[in-house]
Amino acid sequence: MNQFNNDVDGIKQLAISYQQLKNEIGKIIIGQEEVVKYVLLSIFCDSHSLLVGVPGLAKTLLVKTVSDALELQFKRIQFTPDLMPSDIIGAEILNENRQFQFNRGPIFANIVLADEINRTPPKTQSALLEAMQERQVTAAGQAHKLELPFFVLATQNPIEQEGTYPLPEAQLDRFMFNIVLDYPNYEEELQVVKSTTTDTPVSIQKVIGANEIIAYQHLIRRMPIADNVVEYAVKLVSTTRPNTTNAAKIINEFVAWGAGPRASQALVLAAKGHAAIHGKYSPDIEDVQAVALPILRHRVLRNFKAEAESVSIEKIIEELL
Image (cartoon, rainbow, N blue to C red):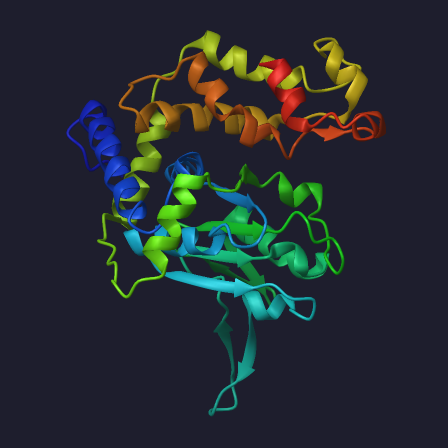
């Protein structure tokens, strides 16, 4: 699908749409500009994002606000220990004509908010895997296609571990970005309190819809990229793998397991998207570096020595960059 006269016009329009979306989201979400950037980037790159932060940092509100600015169908799933796969996918029921029909679950939406995704057991977490990878779900042996575009934006609380189930590595790898939300600074928190304790309603204007998003997704994939930028992305990922030819010293010392090829793909695609939202017609190494941390953060596993010496994954990745 190509809605533009040429790709140059398309990139200009994408950059304009990105700024309009940021402005609309900024009516509700104060600060968190990097977080908003990565969430919108994952949407333009046809990928999923995991938002990690303590309670009260507007993770759920952010996803809801993004959906309000897009003309897309939005569903929220609150993950709990007793949630079943059929509660997400749907199930076959017996209708009034005594025939089985498939009753669709909340996964059938354009934007799915998986709230506190680590509060449900792996059996239920895995119900999202096929949808995230194949854009379809299977029930009673029948495949059901999901309407495009389709995104899973999941939230997770990093401080509560009791009664939670860590996400399997295979599922973590399906998220393009692991986005960490931090506390707002004093000025931002002051603005948040002032804006949320009044009776002034704020309306969000729709900016773009499904057709425009799909067109932007194809546009980003068509963007040219220099060989040396692709080589840099692949080499960066290969340096995260301990005891290999390209492994960096800090990796051999503090990392148990490195990132796989999906990280290289994500780096190149996200670098293209990062260039596009800033009006550039081709990504460079700076674009790869700009998206490296949220892409590698959940794909590089620290070893016991790193945990014992309090060497964070962010410090390791910064050393590589």
